[in-house]
Length: 227
Image 1 (tube, helix red, strand yellow):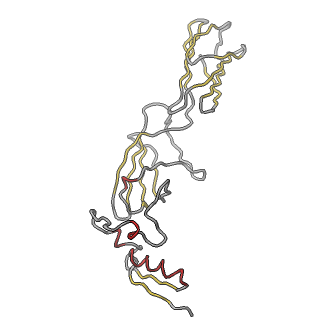
Image 2: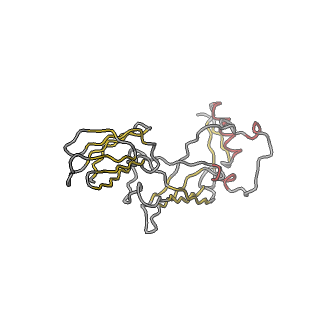
Image 3: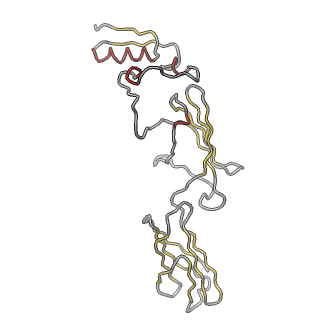
């Protein structure tokens, strides 16, 4: 039977001792009365700072010279727009560091995509409001405009007799329009500018025009618009 080393306290010192003894082949048991390890550090007073160099303050296996992107585990709820038209979010599970140090960006997953009941491509731009709670009880509230990807371009027609004015604008947060083609009912396809007036040989009646738009991000849309 291997020797068992019991460490009383799962704070920074106890965890450092365990991390040092484990590679030596010793069986290590850490006892901590709090619900999670590192409780001493989590409950420190707000103005506590390290007064030693990074080399002396670093824990075994954990460097303080971290650079680049960091993945943070977030667990929370995302609510659909309420009566105020705003998407509200509540997240927890952020490590115990000042929350304002993080530049957080949220991306939807493929297993559980977010579904919105309100068209976010048109109308007043919605805002995302988030309440972030750290393990030590620190709360940070943020509010930022909702940025959208994949909004289709907006095509509008204004017709007077046989003259048709075409106006094409990029969708919300979309790339610039690169090219567009228009096919009138019973006519051949033709290229059009983002704002152009053309003459129709025949009136379209109730039939829709076919408009194909491509942007500088190499996205393409096929739209059917009635004049």
